Length: 572
Image (cartoon, rainbow, N blue to C red):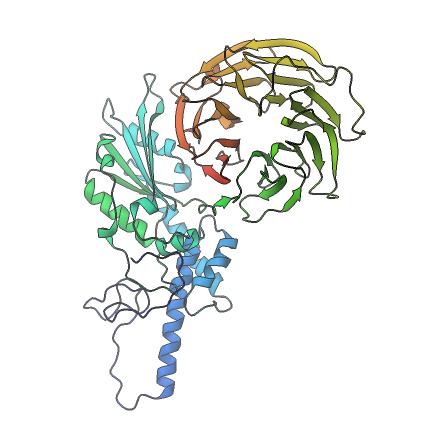
């Protein structure tokens, strides 16, 4: 396969390749890959324009149908079709655009194929089961361990997806529960198969079998780079294919079956195709997430004083506005998803109604720059070197609440401010402690001693658990209602920069190196045998914002402007 950034340059098919699917021509009258008739009845007489036109029309229809099927697969069909991506991929289809009704016919055919797969998908025990009942790695691991010998060895699940290959090792804990081991390794398709286009749409199209306008040499099993570590990760292996029908992933599965002859193979319904890469070219100096009814919004500030709002995974921001003179140092987005509050190096706190009137107004001024802002229940809290200011959305900026501005006894730092959802409790990080205040009148309630500078704070959805990240890499978990410590976590190599509570009592943390780990937030309620710490991955620069979406995926945005979504099999 030749290296290219997009499928755009046309080239003639080789004489020995099928004119529809580019598969090598065999000895039979039909192509073994697509069924195109390679040789037919001998026609005596002159080659008339009608005969030529009829042949050209049939060939064009076959090519269009073949590429359209690949485009539909690459868009997630039949399981979770991304219609927007399919619209884009149709531009790569040969002899396009599709004729009226062709897309619908292809989607119906793939849907029937998916029903057949779901009705006859073998589980790892060798029997038959509905694939919908075994969509998680933990379910498969539990089934595999249940069919093992008396003392079953660890099981590795090697999962092939549209993103690449992920190997996860599972075992049986002391209490008999299935538990995930710390060893989870992921290889992207770019690592597994040299020569794929850098453009994500084009790469998915080729993986799904598309030819498109580019008809260069096709990849075969000799092009794959199989990780040698797969053979030594566990005594037992289950190969899971989430992209059945995609030629290149199917070839990888066949190669893995040869390399691991004792492995069992499972085909399961596919997942949503990977999203486009979202990157703000100028990077983020501050960022915050917000969940709306059916998506996630990201608000990010830059060094030029502008604030942008994205709706994932749309590549273009839904709103952009210059709000500060100089660097944006703090940003937050309201729960209703229509309002952003930001602070800057200029010391100003501004409120921007990007989803409503579009109006922006100043709420407060700090001496020096603004280090953190939070908006909760119509109240805005801002932290600066001169203390904490409290502003409401329905009063003029100079109307101060009783007890505010709240003076703090230390120099503040970014991301060391947390507020409960009802705007009644305020937590501020300090040099060796986190102090909890009454946010309505500025009364000090109690403090949590950390022994190290506080660099990140987060509250869970119920406003009960408080996570305190410190400069020494430790995380302290505290119960706000009981005012008692819950636990302490280590394992990070630098100061914590972002924390987020997630589903199932999980806590995600990112340190100064860009490394991200997920663990159980409350050890007291962790299920028996659950993994207590999992290294998710790493950004190349410090993470500015973390949060979980409604699917349980972890979302992160770093200082270079890159946004990522992480699958967390241990939480599914």
